[in-house]
Image 1 (tube, rainbow, N blue to C red):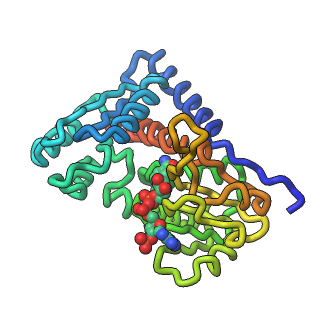
Image 2 (cartoon, rainbow, N blue to C red):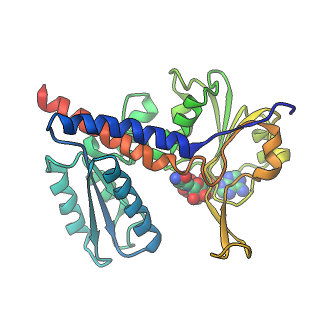
Length: 300
Ligand SMILES: NC(=O)c1ccc[n+]([C@@H]2O[C@H](COP(=O)([O-])OP(=O)(O)OC[C@H]3O[C@@H](n4cnc5c(N)ncnc54)[C@H](OP(=O)(O)O)[C@@H]3O)[C@@H](O)[C@H]2O)c1
């Protein structure tokens, strides 16, 4: 390609969205009314989960929303977790409830997700939210897929009639993003193919993608030969690879062999700094949306 690819700056877009939300929350504060609130519940002491939970709560406070972390011990019973969720379902102060996954093995994740009121399901994992997403109803969209679609929109990447190939069929990324882009709506309306590990010849699919979304979890898996000239490439992967030159001894790379794929693309997301920062921004947006829905209902 002789035209330089556009590097999609997820950090900037996420920061713009946070700024937009902060203005709205500041406005609510100036009116002296309740502001949106998010409670994040975590069970156990997984360090990665702890750090995710803290960044979510921090991002929430930074834009002036109410934010609370419930850190529960690893041996918390399923019953007491469910009853805590119920208390937040009824709380007038918290619009969003997020339970950090994974949960300890003795707790049934499905039961927990279903316990969260669909009205406060800011993670978008509740079966009601997922069902609404598939049938094209307005709902809480899961944060990472929503972040991907938002990046595509803000960079004005044409989706209508385009072939989107999603590699990965997880419930948190692959399936929802594919279904979102499939909808007969502005910013979507794509022809979508979903691939997974049973694809015999993956590159036969990826090479036909106008927009290629990689959500695999394997470092540098998508190589230049798998990408069509001029494709937009969205890399969702977050993988640790050894790096002796880094103080930590590792670095984070995506699922796309960025260095070699770069020149073939029209748009590309870097890792880090592409899709990653969007997830928390979309969580804040969902919390604001939950607040609006709940407030409207109270006023009706
Ligand atoms: N905020 C963020 O930026 C964010 C959020 C979520 C996830 N992620 C990252 O995104 C990546 C994917 O996450 P996930 O939760 O969706 O992962 P996942 O649940 O492990 O799913 C991976 C998917 O990739 C497919 N796959 C694996 N090997 C393949 C192969 N050789 N050919 C074709 N497909 C293959 C799997 O197929 P099968 O279904 O057949 O096993 C599966 O559908 C991870 O690196 C994760 O860390 C980032």
